Image (cartoon, rainbow, N blue to C red):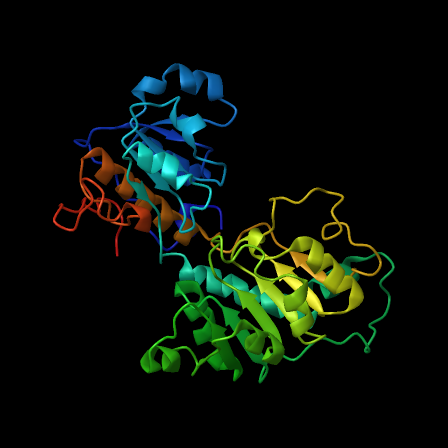
Length: 362
């Protein structure tokens, strides 16, 4: 979908009375979204325009970050009058939170709005891995394709066991979809969900120990955030716990998986396949074995370009949420979607008025 004329949302007209703040954005949005925000703010794009942007650094009032390049003291020192930092997305591990908080800047993000969309994509990626959809398309497009090999077989999804690591909003949305495939759902999480929540999530069963989930699952899906505790959560010890035909699906962040160990696990048959929407770095070097597979890795890896939330409708809601966070910060109000590190900071206490959701429509 590339045109708003066929989309399900309406682009809200710009307010003629609202002040257009001067804001720093790292890179352009899709054309219609870029136009939307330029109608409401004086946008200074940073990437490829660093020198010009830094020359007017004292005029920049807020930062709205679309991509995943770092926001740290080195960047902030060039824009000393910024009042708020707003992230386009739920995850903000690219924010140097201590550096931002040291300047008493509130941080906002866009949780929740992308969960259903990411779960849709996660399910598609899992099906692609299980049923060799990418391989089948490639074979059909090959000039040498002249007959169908009935012995190229995939892996059953219906009735299988799905293990979800991280039963937050995205993980819960993934689990709910499993009911239609009659799957047994296991999950590993910091805390166990209530019986009512587990019932909604296809009668999911809590695994206190990660090894239990890995040993029992046909499909292991990562939907948890990166923290010091979860970095390289899945390494060789974990791969050895998994079924030899198990498929790993990573919808979280690339740093959750030890990629060197993943290459070894795939090459040696410790697991059957991996389907990744995220890697570290993004993109991987073109000569990386996960990108340019050796013979012992061919057919065992699918990588998509971090597109789990990439629908026109969801990205537009993320834009409005991040812009409303930014406006709240500029008005000295509590951000509607405040990052947890900022709870209780000056101006962001519960008693402070929440900024208006001018553009985000529930």
